[in-house]
Image 1 (cartoon, protein in one colour):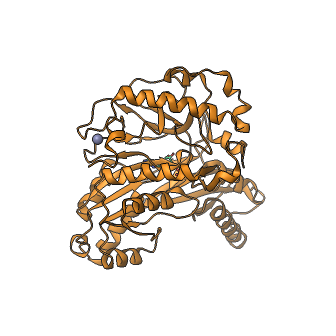
Image 2: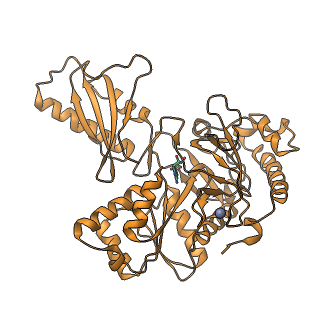
Image 3: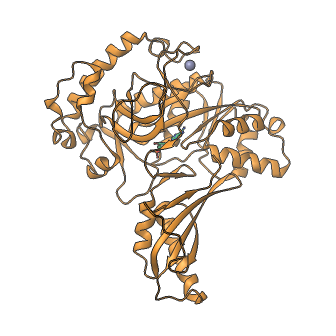
Length: 429
Ligand code: AMP
Ligand code: ZN
């Protein structure tokens, strides 16, 4: 039932003792990176867990400013891997890992998988991107450590996914929720009953993007399986940060590896359990690149009730969204400013634009409405079509997703009284 009983069910007082020891080590280690030493990290004595609040927050922007090596605090000789956030902004946020970091991350992922019932006789099909994105390799290593037959099928190529699932008797899939629904749609249109076609399939991990309880239920009912919510972010390794146990009443967040705070995103003061706020995480076991008080921008709340599964690590609720304007489409992080930068750099584009997100079937779809410059005529179809194609191409290069671009006359996008409403999200979660 437990991958590591001692750690997963550690009494709270012992857990806090361990956290304090690890926090002290982390702060000491982090202080040797150029970024944190410039912040005077050494000036703060950490004698209790509450002392973490004396330290400044770290943001995504800090990671970009410290690019490429400003936050590394070991010799580069000891770094064996880098990963990056799924977005494609000019300056990526890059995370470095030592061999020990990879080992500890893998163990956290195995812990999650074991908790949901994955065992060495399972066939694990990993339908998530391999590469800089952490979801592919992170789960791959975790499943292999348990001893599963691990299929690195990667995302997309739906028919091939089905072929593998059928021919290798896949028992567990790792999939982005919107893609799980797409798989269901495709099977339905093929008239295939998944329970007959994949009789060995028993569970799925749904991760990388926000999704609702209804989405989980749809996936579970259609495939006749159990689906578990999996949360992680590249800055905190990737998958393996928080994960549901079979009780399915929130995600256990692994407090031996991460120090957890939930704060009001405006005042940055702690909120009481049960109140939604921004999740702030400090790595407790990372060697090459510790991160202190990272503002995840993800909104959740703390559950304090003990869990019937016996694990003592607290649970957090399903994420309700983010406190910034980052969009997640097909598991890829996109900021409106990326789109704005492309549009600003394009001749013929006017003043205003708007991003509309929709669900097409179960896929995320983006429409970018762009006002043309007043020097162009809305009736000049030929030049407008060329402009449209250029914008589509440049946006695809920047955000890795192909949007529809809708050109419209200058002044035709309504201007809001206050802050511009750049994104209209009509997606069904
Ligand atoms: P990345 O660093 O590219 O892995 O993206 C991490 C972000 O994906 C997180 O900060 C969340 O906003 C989002 N995310 C990942 N897993 C989940 C999940 N299970 N539920 C909601 N959002 C998620
Ligand atoms: Zn539990």
